[in-house]
Length: 222
Ligand code: 0O2
Image 1 (cartoon, rainbow, N blue to C red):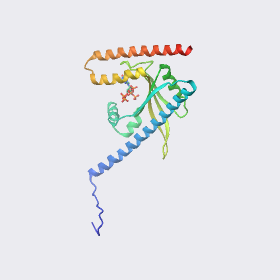
Image 2: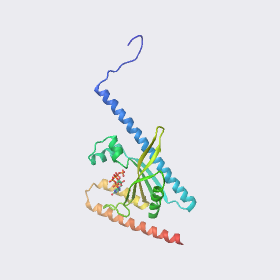
Image 3: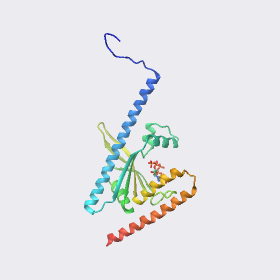
Image 4: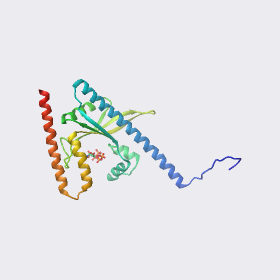
């Protein structure tokens, strides 16, 4: 310290260099998460616009509610590891399509396809992949319509194409998926009959969804 100056010079060390690198990566990760969050905002707005438009012009709301989430860092790391990939930002952006996820819960099965079609038709949306687990349910009984879409988001520096997974399902499919997710996690394969029972419940729920759709068709025909 000289002439009353209080500036302290911290000598560099491998620990400090490591910490600097960590914070540099952390900032990069945080910035990317902000970008995924903005992509969610854009897609959610589009969905709300569609619902409002349908409400005013056709007097019905195909969307019951929308939930969105950014995948947790631990889930991102586990998914990359499961695929035999290194846990880093490049692999996350290149290989994971569901870092940004939106779940759209509709009233009827037909609403799902209508919403999916209206979203896919929009000029600034590119559909990367569609998985129709309603026409082809998973062996567990899981039903839902999954779309991976890409949307340009205009940030202060430049536009970026961001990927978002959109899961569209009925209230009944959502009810099953939420409970099955918790019960499967708690059971953890201990009782194989549980999986069979959950599969049977999915079938019953699907039958109800189909009946509700038929009732709506009858009502709308008058
Ligand atoms: P979370 O926290 O729900 O997001 P891809 O992502 O397309 O490269 P992946 O992961 O095989 O490959 O996609 P898949 O199987 O098409 O969809 C995965 C997601 O669908 C899961 O996300 C669940 O949300 C849901 N899902 C798929 N199968 C089932 C099922 O049997 N039961 C329930 N409850 N949900 C299911 P994550 O990654 O598991 O986590």
